[in-house]
Amino acid sequence: MPVWSLEYLMGRWRSTIGDPTFIGWFTVGSYFACAILSFILVSIDKGADRRLFHFWGMVGLLMILLGINKQLDLQSLLTEVGRQVARAQGWMDQRRTVPFWFIVAFGNTALGGFLSFAVIRRVLFRRFMITFTGLFLILSFIVVRAATFHDFDEMLGFELFEARMNWVR
Image (cartoon, rainbow, N blue to C red; front, top):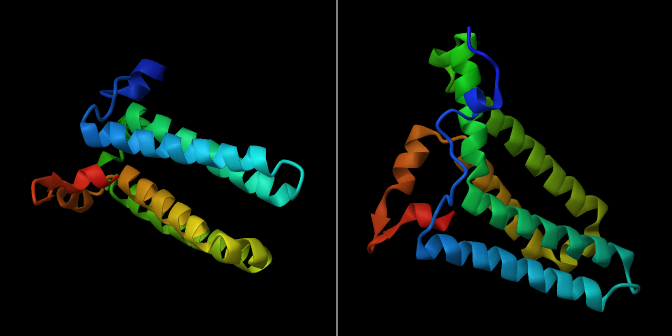
């Protein structure tokens, strides 16, 4: 029986730069540029509309978190902790079932949340439909990627015109 320590749970994951390539840093820079633009919008529209203040503040915070996650590769840490727990509890052979149901549950929750927000906050949604759709797609991709299905990993290893699809994330 393993000792449940942070070191054990982290397994092979190490706190290093996850994607030190040009595209990796470009992605992080893009996240941070979006965060800066969001915070500029927050500062411009402080008192006029609280909904816009909260909306752009949350978008800015989310972009910062995504930029940090991109380089620290925290979803790989989550996956490694899941593997270690599966090994320790003896259900490693069924480990593919957990990511599958995680994606199904997240997908349904995200889609339900997206649609209910679109209905409840119709005016805000119509005004920023492209922003909402982009956030939904980015977050969905990240969660599916974090589940690390073997087939999905193979697809991301595919190269098109010397550009790896993994760079897209």
